[in-house]
Amino acid sequence: MPLQQIAKVLKANGTDGGILVGFREIDPEEISLEEPVFVVFDGLPVPFFFTDLQRRGSSKAVVHLNDVTSLKDALELEGREILADIEEQEPEEDGPEMLVGWTLKDGGRISAFVDIPGNPCLEVETKNGTTVMVPFHEDLIESVDPENQEIALILPEGILEL
Image (cartoon, rainbow, N blue to C red):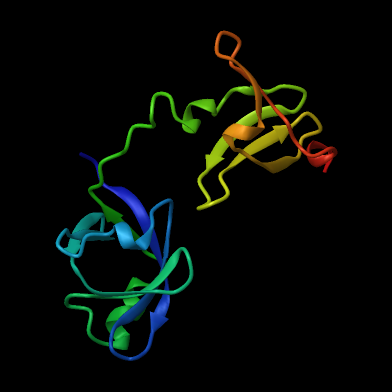
């Protein structure tokens, strides 16, 4: 399986080799400390293991990698991508992810499902070219037309006119 970018080293953090990392499309808590991650040097992926991971917000963490023990080592990693061998999860066949690409009746095209805990949303590219987030809950579904890939939602007035 090919390596995929899971994060990018933003900057060195402290003098003991810590680095501030920004994660992409993956929750830092989903990272297994037992599995290697890779940083590319001279075109070759070099394996490292996380020895410590401390969250900083929702998509960042201060991490320590084995063999990165000084500020000098950490500075060499700045700006580099962190890759991992991760399995891509197939979207649920009947889950909200299947709505990506569908039309929101009288609204535009659904470009993404954003699973915000307690407040799932659909990202919609409106007819006037803007992108808006609209709440998505089963109580808001007015109708679903799988044949035409169209869904109608009961939304607050004006939400699609931003």
